[in-house]
Structures are given as C-alpha cells and as structure tokens.
Amino acid sequence: MKNKVALITGASSGIGKSTAEAFAAKGANVVVAARRKEELHSLVASIEANGGKASAIQTDVSDSKNVEQMVAHTIKTFGRLDYAVNSAGIEGVPGSVIDLPEDDWDKVMDINLKGTFLCMKYQAKAMVTSGNGGAIVNVGSINSFLGFGYGSAYVTSKHGLIGLTSCASAELAPQGIRVNLLCPGITDTPMHHRARTFLGDDIYDKEIIPKIHLQRAGLPEEMARTILFLCSDESSYISGSTLTVDGGFTLTI
Image (cartoon, rainbow, N blue to C red; front, side, top):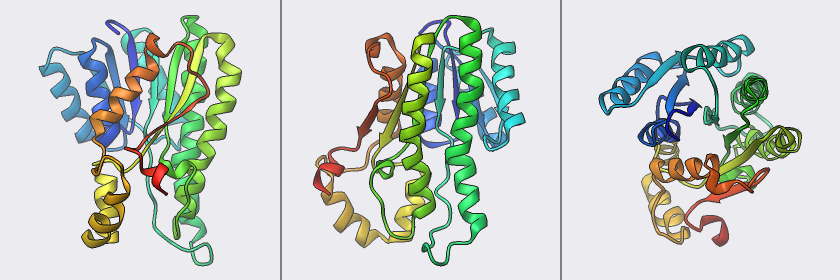
C-alpha cells in the first residue's frame, strides 16, 4: 500500500483510529476525519512520529458540505484516493419504539446511515474521476442483522448499511471500485465501554462474553487488519459482501 492514499472517518478513536494506524504502517498516506479535532491532531502526530504521512480534517459526516470538503482535502493533500473507510458512527440514546424522541432517531440516522451515503457519494466520485479504481469499506455491526430492545434507531441504521453497500457495489464495480461492509462484534472500543456501563459488569461478563466462541471482546486492531484485507488486492474478488468479525458470537445467538 506504499504511496496509496487512505481516508478514514471516525478516526478519533476505536476502530477508525486503529485502521488509520494500520494503513500508515503499510506505507499508505492517511487522511483522518472526525468531529474531535484534538484527537485527530494527536493521531497525526503519532503516525508522523513513526515515519508515516498523515493529515487531519475535522468533519461532520452528516453535513454534505463537510464531506465534500473532506474528500477535496484528501485530493489536494495527497493527489488521489485509493481506499475509503467509513467508520464514523454513534450508538444514540437507548429508547423504546413508543418513547424514542424523533430528534434522537434523526441524529443516529444522519450520522450512521446518511453519513455513510454522503461519504461514499464523494469518495466514489473522486475514485471514478481518477480512473484508478479503489476500495471502500463501510463499518456496520452485528446489529446490521441482529436487533435488540431499546435500540431501534441504531439497529435500523446499521441494517440499512447492508442494502447501501450492496447497491453501491453493483453500481461501482464496473468502475473498478469494490465496496464491502465489515460487521464487528463486541469490540474493545469507547462505544462498547459505554454499552458495558449501561448493561452492568454482571450482565456483560456472565451473559454476553460466554456467548462468544473466543470468550473475549475483539480488539480494534483486529478489525483494522480485516479492513486492510478488504482494501488490499488479496480480496480482489470480494465486493458487495458483509464480513462478520465477531469471534463466533452470532453463531451462538
């Protein structure tokens, strides 16, 4: 991946951050995007300290002008776009279908689903214009196909990514652009720490972890390595696919 260019959203923490670091370690030039500016600049400094090249741009993926500027910044800084990873997402506020405020529903949809659509819209356009092809990986969840109570907004937004990814693959494959969906299971990220706090240690340790075949949460770097595989030539015949990386959890449910 030396001298190729990767753009990662949601890069201020968790899977996005680990993915940016993994691309840089493989020699790619990296653009990191998220809403938290300080964390992005810290990540860029870390990548550069390890000999990589990186640039940060503060971005709200639910805002089309922000997203357009993010992709334009990538092209201006590094001259091309080869890989795009759409990892930005929020869990939202838990609430029942009966009581969930409309604004809370909209916020989750705007970032998780609309945000991914907007990112692909401008990322794919840049890739098509360059004529070099590329690879896009969207980040879903095991909740892209598993529901749970009080999570209707989050689950619906992640379900939508399966259809969005499939359609984008059908449209973009003739242009040499592969699009796939990574569906992580329980992963040791700030989002899952919040979920653990909400559920309580007892439920998490005694009811959830035992259902995972590997008996542990996944690591962000394990998801990052899978994303790099989906972007690499090693996965040249994989497009429109949903790849579940969950330690066997969904086989137990």
